[in-house]
Length: 242
Image (cartoon, rainbow, N blue to C red; front, side, top):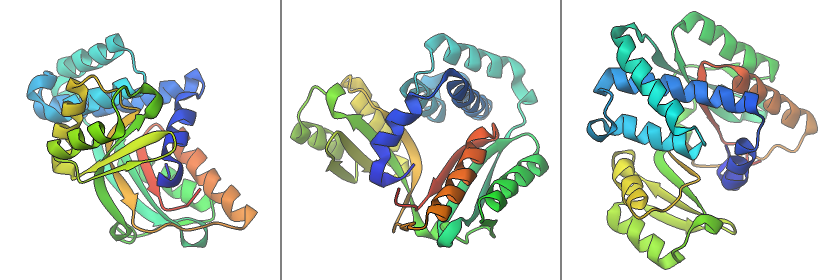
């Protein structure tokens, strides 16, 4: 989750066992359901759904599973009653954590998220208590090994499409956009058959917190493990410099 090792974490996430992949697919299925309810089942006429389908493909969700999720959501119509909720709080040593959930039972989700913070020696705060420490950005990560064009060409392609920033790491490229420009930049790369390891609108910390105590590291990882296990939790963001 950390920008300091974003690509390494993406690779680790994709190497997880089938049970973990199942949870990722469940979460993506919920996002698809909400997007279909809001804008219809045709990705070409529903940019939010199109972005989620791209995200699902980046997470190795099979095409037939994506299609089934869209058809199921279209058939359910108004029976899809998930809603987005966001929680903010603090982990060990003042680390900032934002949790995004998609739920059909806010009381259950709130209790589970609070439990995850508490067991990790942290606490849930009020809305806005840490979100000001993050910038909402479109973020695209590209594996160098999967990219056939050179860095300069890729940078110009992204910037011309409306990207804000381009950076090169040892094993990957990172492209940042305004949330409003994200879909256009992602589609531009997709149309050039550029494979994206990850493409989503995310929360990027303005500063990072170092954890030096072994107990603090264990505690924050416990919080993250509990959040990972909760099907209601779609994403979480933090400023721990892993």
